[in-house]
Amino acid sequence: MDPIPIEQWLQRLPIFSEIGADSLQRLAAAARLRPLERGAFALRAGDSCDAFFVNLGEPVKLFVLAPNGNEKVIELVSAGQSFAEALMFLGRPSPVNAQALGDTRLLVLPRDAMLQAMAADQRLALRMLAGLSRRLHGLVGDVQAYALQSGVQRVIGYLLRDAGEEGACTVVLPVSKATLASRLSLTPEYFSRVLRELEEGGLITVEGRRIDIADVKR
Image 1 (cartoon, one colour):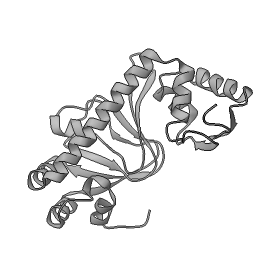
Image 2 (cartoon, rainbow, N blue to C red):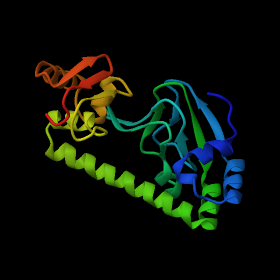
Image 3 (cartoon, helix red, strand yellow):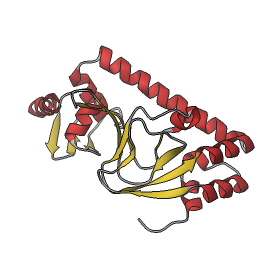
Image 4 (cartoon, rainbow, N blue to C red):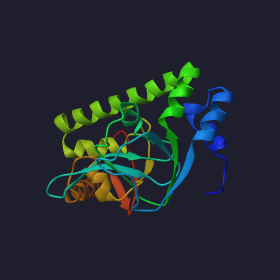
């Protein structure tokens, strides 16, 4: 990435787009950029968390490990998205691991600086609340999908999440199929079988991580 002042990074992010110049400057002075190589951890389960993070590059996966070593991906954090806000406010140890899936950088925003900025600018506080509400809504949606939808429906729902109502479209998977399968609470084998069945049915064409959908409505 090109070297860009932290204040400019903040201005690019929707959550900070409307706050005052003084608050923005104070946040920029307190924030820092943290390089993270592929496979490196931003957080490990049990770590204390006195800041939250905005991902500026390749995806970061939030996951937990079962006692038998199996991994469950909770969330995939793309560029421009944030994580650990609730942990920062609660001051509790992290229940999840956060690992970079590619070389990236994180914008680290300390709790004290965020609390001061939110106290000084109500718009930032409202945006933080809106972000946490969206996260909660997404988690409720995940629980509903796991309880009420079949594996095929979950895969199709993911492929169509950004599609229009009809016509053709192309989806490029942002992470490996195994990682995405875990995010959807499926085994990698089942995920691959669903893609193969959809392809055999003439609904999609798969080339690596590129998936072409011939007809969204169908």
